Image 1 (cartoon, helix red, strand yellow):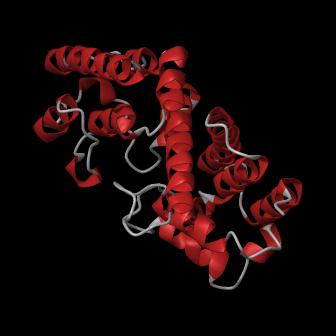
Image 2 (spheres, rainbow, N blue to C red; image 1 turned 180 degrees about the vertical axis):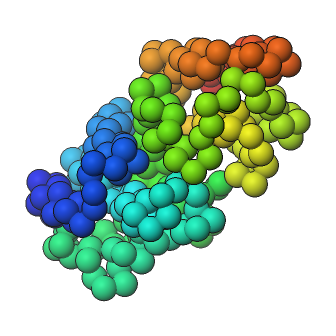
Image 3 (cartoon, helix red, strand yellow; image 1 turned 90 degrees about the vertical axis):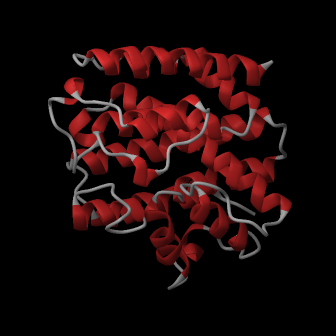
Length: 257
């Protein structure tokens, strides 16, 4: 059985290693608990049984466990320095830390696959049906909370390694704009400017797996919120962001229907 309360206590104990006054650490702690809520929301919306709802919550609690070491060592969310999902799997399973969070080992492969795949461009092939389901839930929940993060958090905490106060003057890279307008997710290596990073998050809608997730984005008005947070001083960027707004809204409406 999954005892989420026990897992949460262990998670809080783990956080004692880190400086919670660090804005980026604080952001990731808040993000973790919000992803737990959103995973529960999606799992219940899908009509899953209690076991799979609790499993989705546990995966959410653990999905970014590699981030805290990444921030401590590099002051960055850049996976070039440390691939946080793969490192999270290493932290949990190399020395059997996972047993601190859950006694039963029957869920280990599902947890391992979900944590590993939560940030990948695509889910790896060869997984079982339950592994794929839990991978899709954590990927959607993680993306949904990324919209909340971009709405409320300080820019310097969101982009600790690349933020500059002149973001409103930046251009959109041609490849990023063209990819978005084809309703495709942005590859990380194609991002060149901070605006590209921002558009990359909006493009998460193209990888949402469930109707519940798309309706959540629509009901929270995240497309308008994301686009309107920045006061674009670059005319070309401002016009292209309006194209992106229309494209995103049309996509969501089409998928929901």
